[in-house]
Length: 94
Image (cartoon, rainbow, N blue to C red):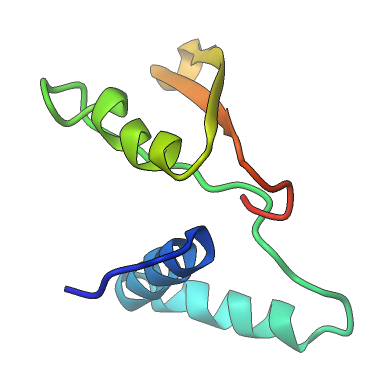
């Protein structure tokens, strides 16, 4: 299993795995990277099941340990979705 040492490496690894499962995402990234303007992810969303040990509280620890700060709670009633947003340690990160 590949490992990461920086937040950038983590997001590159996550994107690599996402593109492996969703090849059309790779095509979108390729088009965006071909433009003259810089491309970067401004946010990333993760979905977790609401099961003990598998929810937000487990996943958020990875990002808190990487310097992210837990911010506001959000509830999207129509989508039956609860969420938090996390402030990155560097505003160039998603």
